[in-house]
Figure 1 (cartoon, rainbow, N blue to C red):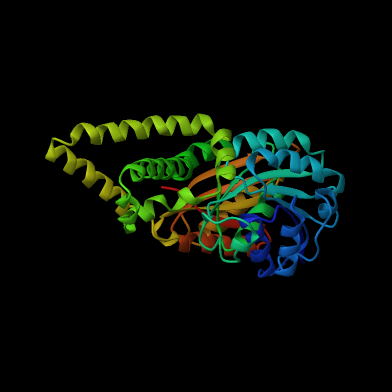
Figure 2 (cartoon, helix red, strand yellow; figure 1 turned 180 degrees about the horizontal axis):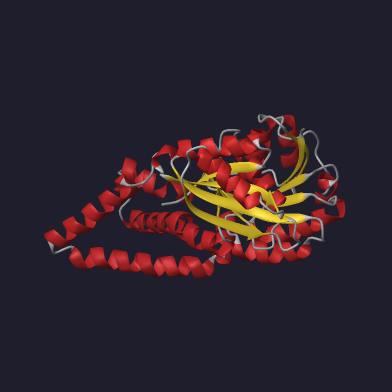
Length: 365
């Protein structure tokens, strides 16, 4: 069965979602809308959507899933604008890089029977616009999915499947935990890169050779400073509290280096610590040991025992388990933590054969 998807926003990330789903089995992007009509037409011409819509609501009319890919502060208004065309049972998700405020604004907007589940693919570029979009943007990238305790399990599973269809690796996080994490690994690097570029530009005004002498290290460090200022203004403002906390930590780290410049031993310790941390970054999903097997379950006697027994009998050791009930009743998400990608795949295959909707995801160390 083909899942019909509507795309609202056809820039770098939204356009890449459209291209990725066009190449994926089981998905069709039936319509695309962008406030800049030329972008939606570009998406259609490139095969990322079947037709361009005149409004967000018109784009949503045929869709079972709606992907909102607009600046963070515009996500809730875009969801509201789409709702007149959204059918009961539809799932709305987004790709914004801030989740707490987005989820808190968007969830109350949707009527009963329509589901909003936040999402954020950890992939991008300093380029922007549909012309920078690519079908492979999300391959092997982490795609954060941020349900709440009230999220419908089937809707969450649908977003997981969509993320996986693009080649990404889904990872479930609480919305506010997500925002604290991206403040470290995404938003702080943007501020650091932009700050370094501003410092260099000021010095270049006094000593013109500064930028001419910029070699690979400087260019690597400042690459993301070329990102769209309007997009990053929005992101940093929306996640101000978490970013401010990380900037305090970063300022302390810079001060530690400054205060160590006359002490070679302290410098060596700081540099070695950073080197060890860099070497510890995971290179691939296979390097992460712990995985989650997430099962959509009904609220029926014996289901928990059926799932855990089937996995145990397949020789897979469950190291942790969590059951999140849907507030509407009828079931929820059962998450089994296992060790190793092979064990996770074995558990998935066993449960899928028994008819359970199930997916796996890598857990952060």
